[in-house]
Length: 185
Image (cartoon, rainbow, N blue to C red):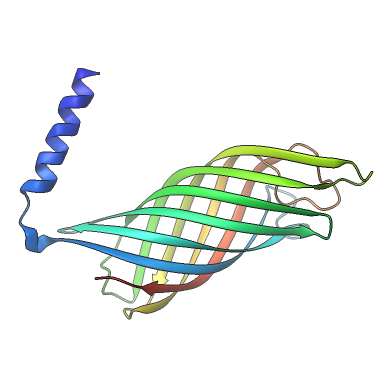
């Protein structure tokens, strides 16, 4: 525990000791649409659409780009069921923010809440947790840029079912795309 405190203090000192001109903080707001399904059998035939938004709280120091990434999605499962998702991810930018291709990778956590009626009209409610692995990119160098990303979630997530709604979930894959609006420099 003491080693963790010392390493945290050293990291904070290193971050604050760097010259001010090499540090910046930026915020991107990113409305999005998505599509997700359970792996392996539901991605193509029984996935669900989502609408939502995410943000990139980007901290740059020299060439290092770290993004804190809150994400919220509403899943349109069918007429009798819907789901909400809240995610928090930490992403690492892999390219320069000024180039045409701005890729990132990340890891984070997911909280998913689903409710609705199953095939027998029984009310089903569940709250599930998962681990996200994320990869994506923004395209272009302006203040408004399209983006796309893929998510792989490890966990018992049950947001994508229509005919088997209410049964246990499985690992899932999802795709998001939208526009990124830079609101600060």
